[in-house]
Image (cartoon, rainbow, N blue to C red; front, side, top):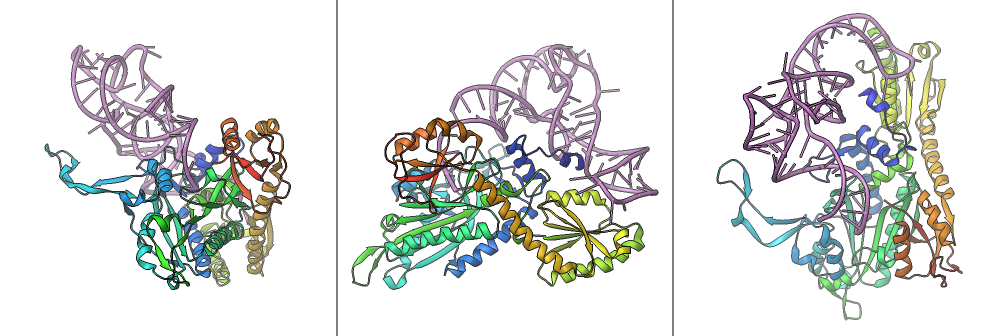
Length: 494
RNA sequence: CGGGGUGUAGCGCAGUCCGGUAGCGCACCUGGUUUGGGACCAGGGUGUCGCAGGUUCGAAUCCUGUCACCCCGACCA
């Protein structure tokens, strides 16, 4: 294994290969035997759990409650919202039978043709339809609103080409579905949730973002508006990391979810939906990691500190166990997650490399020399800097260092993002430079024609109309030469 | 669905052109020496050569068929 890990492809040589190898070698996930699907391994899942816990906490702060709906959706549900079915039909897995039987020759198991379903069932690609079908029963009066639900689940979209975490046929996510009495309230909720995502991703995952609203063609199928958080990977490509949709009354109408308002008039409920997925894991990896492996922000590292003793013989090992075991406990009492690794089946050098590969934020090493001097070596994963400090008071030093690392990782990524956002008003210049990566802030006339031409010429797409960019006097569209409506972020994306 | 490729040990591959005992590296197991940046020595186990036919005294290798997977395009959180 050791030599293999050493041969991790360099980021600069082949970013894609580097990413794929890193996911596998850092023990996050691997390709499943099932086409296009992924096995998330214990270490990868531990990180996902941290994401889940923190997001879930933040959702609940906004009044959202968790629910669970079935994985199977009657085919007829999907067809009730025209745009929605248009958007998802091509990638749906369909359940057609409910039984197998042994084949005539007894050699294999075959689908029993007698067990054909009257109505086929779809494996959910997203749950708007099944949830809104149920909301009809829950909602009669304005007093029943708002309904604020979220579910953590898996969904399946039969993707042509897959990549671990970024695009797999099955993925884990959360999907929030809310119903409201007024348009304003629903729009507010959609915008609120994109900000919940943005705050979480920035503060907790240390990933800087551009937040904005999607163009009409990039909208979710069935949405009136789609809000998005766009992260920049180290190769300059964009990764849509979360979305929040204002769905208007489309689903209310399609599923006949009507309520009596305060004026005793019937109206259709207003909807939002919002989701983030295991794709966030991809964003995490591609934002922070380096040629030595993962770099995890302390707030979501399952292990924040690893302590490695370097000992000769059982006697010395016992001495370290006592001293460093106690240190581990003191760190844990400060709320820091610690692994004390005194295993003797791996040599120190191997452990160092392995924990770097896994992105553990802080490594503490103590050997014979330190024992004599009452010192300990501290290595921080983000800069790879080593320092030998006094053993006394090391707990506070580490606690402070973890905070500093969290901040530094974000600052580093933020500087990268800021320095790769370019203002561009010239199409020729754009066409040439966009291939190098980066976000291009360009004037856009708001037409689909322009958008389509950019995509055809460069494969780049309009990522969003950013919230925090001044939209007065957007200038002249760089493609059509017409007056621009907005300045938008254009980039190549995953 | 269009173009390209690959199926041989747990993983990564060589062997196929030119048919003749199934190989290498890593991993794994045992014993020993090691341990401040991915240890070393000695010994050991591991295969329906993707599947089905055919040619042949003999097939991983040649022929026919078939299945699966991967990569590049259109779709997508």
